[in-house]
Each structure stands twice: as C-alpha cells, then as structure tokens.
Length: 215
Image (tube, rainbow, N blue to C red; front, side, top):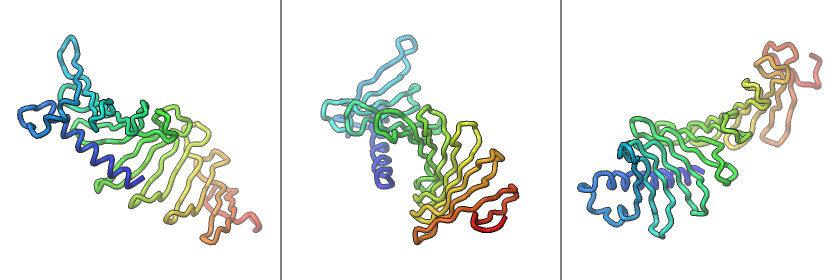
C-alpha cells in the first residue's frame, strides 16, 4: 500500500501540473498534447470552471475528474484501471494541499476509507467506515507506515469499544468494553510465539487479571 501511495502521489502531482497548464495556457507550452486531453465544463450562468475531465494516458478514455471552484481544485476522482468505477478520491484544502485520500476497500466504487498523511508523506492514520455507510467507526494509527494501534465502535453507539495494539506487523493485543463503561474490561494478549491469554478487569479500575487466576 505504501508503494502504491507514493505512485499515486506522483500521478497526482502530474495531474495537478497538467491542470495548472490547462488554466494558464501561456505558461505551459511543453504540455500542449496533455492539454488536448482535457475537457472543461463551466457553469452556464457564472462562467466559472466546475469540472476538468482528463485522459491521463492518452488512450481516449477519461480516467480523471477534477472538480473545481474556478481555479481552485476541490477534489479529484480517479479511475485507475479504467473499468468505469472510481477507486480513488482526493480532497484538497483551501491551500490547495492534499487533505485526505478516499478509497474503496472492496474496489467496487463505494468510498469507505480515508487516508491522512503525516508531514513526511507517510501514512498517519486511516479512517474506516466498516458498515460502508459513510460514517467513520474505526480509526487506524500508523507509525513509519506500519499499523501501530486501532480503535473501533463495533456496535454503532458512537463510543469506542474495541482497541487493538500492534508490535511491528504482529497483533499484540485486542481489548473490549463489554460493560459499556467507556474503558476495556476484557483483553486478549498475543505472544510472539502464537500463544494467547485472556484477562479481565471485573471492577473497572484498570487492573486486569488472567481468567485462570483468582480475582
């Protein structure tokens, strides 16, 4: 995913460069061929630019749609494999910097996850709508592009009730709030050797005890 993300960023930079050329023709004579592959759409009443359709690979198929507010990019939708289904959504802030990237975990055109980058370009977090209804109920936090921890609202009540921690690429623990107290009361600890241990916090004071011990 990281390698794909870097490729997407390169492609996005190219697209934005071409779009800039389309808006400011006199400064970009070297991209004349690319500009021929752009189809602009303007608001009929105001004349303001609303949409730029782009054939990025020149094969005659539109694969990139840039939604505009005049010269400002709002979002870009991309059909990477040109199967007729959008599989990447890019959202831009008022400073024209990439804010987040949406994608479809099922590759079916339903946007159900959003990636946010750290200042160095690595993945900082990914927000997921596991029910695919547009509502984020799971957030994954990354360190150096590796999943470090995650939290999730599994029952849809608006409160986190599941916590995961990772050690490198290995799941280290999963904790659950089965009592709806807002804090975990059950947790599974996974050893590097594949073993697992269940612990319980029956009093809700943060003190966990293995289930095979007296509590």
